[in-house]
Length: 367
Image (cartoon, rainbow, N blue to C red; front, side, top):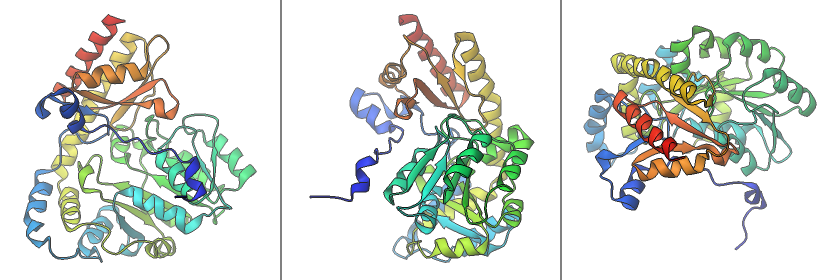
């Protein structure tokens, strides 16, 4: 059987390894496995969100409220925007895919950083678009402007903070950049980790309301998968001017978000205490990872997200490290798939982080 030729150039996305795989492969009990690979909230979901999921389970035989009225109303209040500037997706990933299908095609070019979220390229290549990357792995907006002037892309992706490296652009930098972009070029600002960034440095904080009121060609995407601890519920959102939202809505399949997901997101958004606790854990634990890297002589990117990337020189090999830790029940993300001799570690609880440092030290002593 033959398939679309565009698939030939697409590499399958490598998600973080699941806990169940460690249990099956090495017989380690589920409770003993620590997963610091997928940037999930180590504190878990809000108890209020879990209660909301249980409560609506009895309605599983009904289709979801496709208007998503309650969640849109809550998000509109949270961001101080109108409800018609919102679209809800099965994870913010789905919003990214809508953007590509709505704006680009096989004649288009799509601009992104050299090292950034892999799904931008996958979704772009799926429609046959040409990928343009900046020379630097992190976001260098001068390089973005040079590439924009040369290639005139249909879409620009800015991931801030950037996954998988963790760097984050200042809001002022972004606004200065956007003023130099033509209004017919769609700029997607991926804010999946913005809650962490603005808590660490107010200069990184992006206000979606100001963004979309200032620039008609910008869409801001957010998710409930990270700080809100709902990765398993697959729910995210996009905020843009109504013209963009109306275009994307034509691509949204009916009932794309489940009833439990809608209920969980609504409850999580209202649980300010859990949000505060989650951010505080990240701020308190991140310096431990930075100090560990300095002590061991590893390079790292100062991170504004809930993860940190360590870079290695030979003889240390990221694949070897990842496999060694995996066998010990510690799952981290190997960045070899990004062409890097590096690993990415989600910032966990104090107990989880201590286990990582202990196992990593054991590995280093064997080298």
